[in-house]
Image (tube, rainbow, N blue to C red; front, side, top):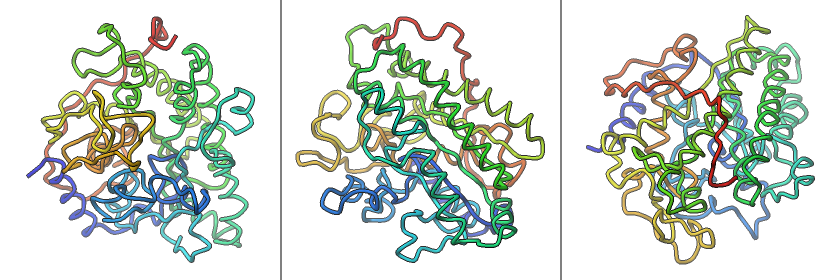
Length: 396
């Protein structure tokens, strides 16, 4: 049996045994790594997002749900393991969604920084009015007054919820880097992105949030979309062990380093609050370093759904477009469409957070998931501290 499939069965079994004793609900903010359908509601019906059409959703749901993958996301695995229903998108509220066990504000393509910032930078973003600040406004001004009109009920709802703030910020860098901004100008954006995340966390704490999980950035130098966009014959730009673009991974580490520093500061200022850093970077690096060990026999750097080229990515013909093809078994791939991961990869990241060593402090301190017989993950060193700030990058 594929190792990734075995993990899924373990997670499902655990979810059947679990109760929601740890947290009564999940509240989520973020981008396409956590979007469970909001982007469908935000786009015109005549131009739906690609996630609203096959082959998206084919593995688990057997139909498109608005998730940017072939199946479940990290947030879905967390909900299942905690014994909670899958978290409903907030923009399904008008369709009668049940939000007692959680609500999701994440929107594919959204940024941590406001739309006005990108307008000044001359950068085009996919969806207007869906930034992290906009999501927080939906929560404060639209959701809470309707869901819990009594302030004490709102406070209890937040205190007993697991609040996921991100992953967020990845699109800020995606838009800038893939629309031709210089590396140094993108590097200057990082503190602003981290500050936007910090402001949201502090506001959620004021509203009553007790336990917040804040993911860092993935190793973006391993994403086929970047490997295609920045392809070069200069092998010194690549990590010889993984084939990933080393300078982009160092950039992701720089973001994560600044984010962790900011989270440490928030924790010191709020000692009664639980701030948990989710180390998406190293949780993912385990299968980029050892893809065969984790069942990814088709490799970690070639997209399952795409249009050819060395990484099966064509910027003019993305997954779901005419001329694209989909691999026979997505569970053998890390990458789904070149920028998003497969359900198999997301399942392993989730397991690394819930049962592994990839949350700081361990998430099990606040909520221990049911024990399982899952094979142990290979422990990796923490991210390299990037004091020399990535000089000599291909994009500079």
